Length: 333
Image 1 (cartoon, one colour):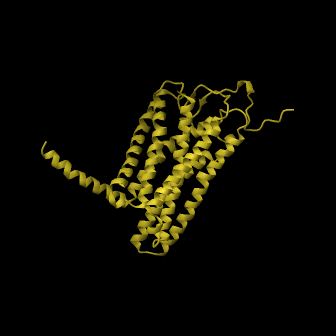
Image 2 (cartoon, rainbow, N blue to C red; image 1 turned 90 degrees about the vertical axis):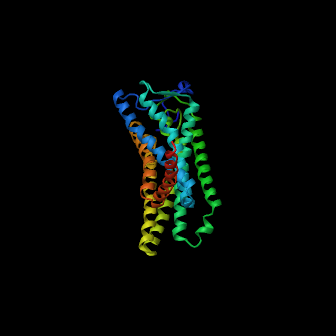
Image 3 (cartoon, rainbow, N blue to C red; image 1 turned 180 degrees about the vertical axis):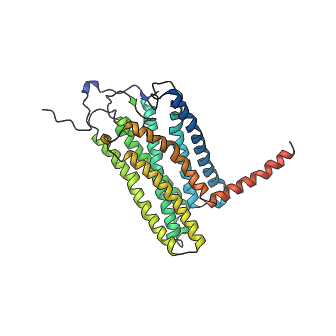
């Protein structure tokens, strides 16, 4: 007798298991054209603002000497990751709003590459936020040893570790999913080749792949978030116990900014991926993706620039340095 089929086992016969020649990213192609054009018109400015804001933070962290500190080194790296993350996902999503109904056809290699880059960049960001929490912990809780501990070499080492960690997990997850045969066609009910949306198309027993996905969520989401919360709890205790009012206010604002970003990032990611396939709705996931693809990356530069006096001062200095030269040049034209 054959063993009973589990909840993650396909009921399709093995004769129908195939490797699709292409995947079709459905996106919102079934929505009315007028609504899709409206979404394009609303989301395009958000995309441009996200790129501009994160590029501004990256440029300021590079060119302004006052920002050549570990905290702004990591902030610049986070902005660079956000720029890459946005470029991987958003242009194709925006193009999908303007294409005829039927979705966008992509080769399996393109789908796998997009999935891998998405996981690698998202995973690197998760680990990078934990590195930023470590930096703030050492700066505030171990101020006498901070210059000796948080050296340039350690900063680059932490950044490299974050990128390598995210890339290794991305390679493992992508390989685990695309080694499966597919029996439900190649219709991806999402705005990009997201892991759950592709995994549900796979044949055979998907338990291993789903367990790998949940383990990756544990490593990239739960453990870093616990470390971040523990670090900032200790930081807040120290802030409330020592220092003057001005110093406490500045340190508290910095911690509040970092915590806000961490809660947004980990909250969205946990809600999306720390769930079994049987309990999720791809239509709901597709709607939620509009938030973490378009709104969350835009909030990062807004939080860091509007609440950060160092960033505001650096921007004012850069602008004031450029303005006299532009004015002088205008006098001779």
